[in-house]
Image 1 (cartoon, rainbow, N blue to C red):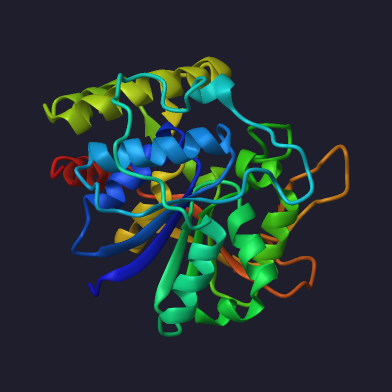
Image 2 (tube, rainbow, N blue to C red):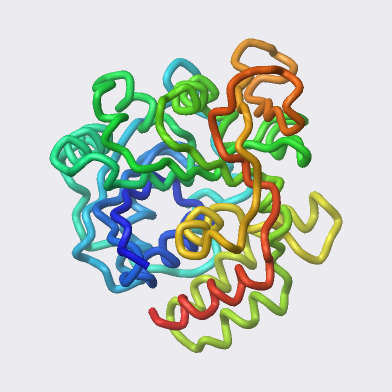
Length: 313
């Protein structure tokens, strides 16, 4: 498989951290050009810090981390400390990062990187609210044509919402940004709650990470024990969904996933359904298809891949 050039846009978050680790454990397939942080699970100062902590955990102090947008395009910021804890990476005890935060803004990094690379050569891997991407597209519309694909953990259809009755968190934080990205003329793939709710972290899977007997394995186990407790309580189950690593797993092993090319729009006006992802799964609206909406996953294959790759760090 040819190496893919990617930019990771993220709001770490324990599940974001696991996604970043999966990418960094796969250097033969993925060339991470840089990481851009965005406000989401926790404020921007913490997401920028957490991205660097994860890079250092993986032994990649050489990576460039850029802070992006501090707030959604037009709305006040909504965060998720109730899930991720006040640091965003509650669970393990990890050292303060030593690697610097780059001076360039994350939006500018996305723009400038796309400008200097060949067309159809870079994939954006979006693990949080889509603010950075939407602002970049609005500021420099010509960069859209340079992209190969956008793969994002975003939305829900059959699984409805996880932050409101109808909205998935990443979309709900900045629905206007999500709609801008979905309206862009580039190949788009969504990994929604419909998929991530089939990737369930059980206690034996957490133990499998701990059995790696490495700092990464210990940290991932501690992170997931903390963050997954919320969903176990919420859904009344012994397992909880793992969201953001699905984006990286899709790039590494797309055959683990299946979905449909459908029309996807975002509700930006209704108070009742703000941030709802309206996926025309059955093709009843006559609106033009604009994104691949993933609906299923080989969960066992996913965890085999994740565990095997994390063992390399």
